[in-house]
Length: 359
Image 1 (tube, helix red, strand yellow):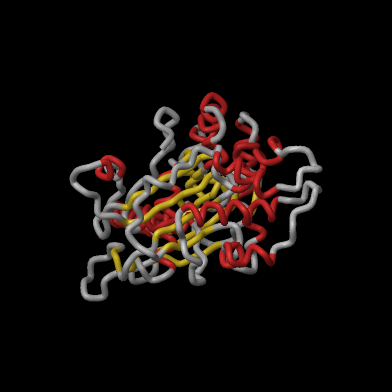
Image 2 (image 1 turned 135 degrees about the horizontal axis):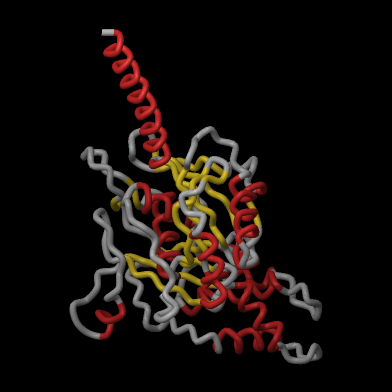
């Protein structure tokens, strides 16, 4: 009898431990951390599914600790196991929440897509060696350079979710992200690349059918066309301008800028966008960069401090080429929020960058 009681006590203790472990795992599955490893630096984001399962909350960063979320660019991390560990420990130490074993995704964007594969592979080899290991409150799940089209797709999800065009049906208990209005198309200009994404009804035949054959679809929405222009980011364009600029005595600076834009090889003519509803993401408040407001900008001078001036001309060139109207102010969003929604709600994995097809 005594042995039976001891056995029952052990079974009870094991059951309690298992329940605690399972609850911790379930908690972690409802929470996700994403390190946005961009071209100029990295940022830590933590998201959690809402209590009703319909949407996510931003856990970190808040406005009070946004600056603390920043860290070095992944492209600057040395190909050494200690450097990789320092990067992961430094980025995850910025969060002080109580959750344990939060799945951590290191998702790099155009800054890593610009680097040759033979240089990025060793860094990811060191990162992948750390999979399943815990860094502060986080457990490394995935480390990759995401495709440009998925960067645009995630930005599209985030912008439409944040502005009430994607959400959850109140008439059904099913918790899947779906349309709640006519979706926005998005134009996102980052430091190293530019993304355009929108919903489309692909034609069954003709040249447009070939263009839209690789649309991204989910259960609650379909046919999202997303394209990325590597090298079309503001920092990359400004770098080209600095390299190719004619002598200082030349006063036709805007003409020189347009020459560089035209040499980017970006062809907008093939994109047949079906709505008037575009939204601009990135690089500050878009309204002041619209053509009608260009005259209020300070004229560029011959110093090296011309980046804002160049940004304004570049954004104007892009918006005029796409025939975009000045957008209404929208709720700011971050592409990582779209990634979190797709991973947590849709249960879909990110798409990696393919150097062979440059997706």
